[in-house]
Image (cartoon, rainbow, N blue to C red):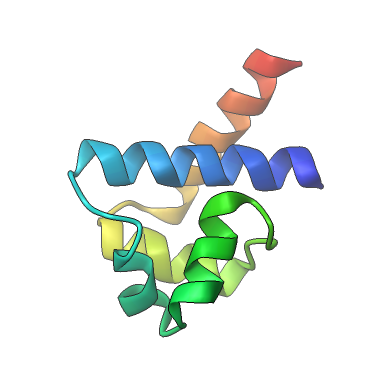
Length: 78
């Protein structure tokens, strides 16, 4: 489970960087405070499906596309 969480985290960070957005943007999309957003970005909290849907919608990326990217990231590590 933690490997999947880290793959999601890395992919979210990479997409934020590609779109030149700050991690602080997550607070807006998720409707959470800074502490929760920092915890997700640091890999200290587990991403929920609802979190993923909100963030990917904000990034303008289809959930299935992002999950396939995460799967590919997991395969390259295994």
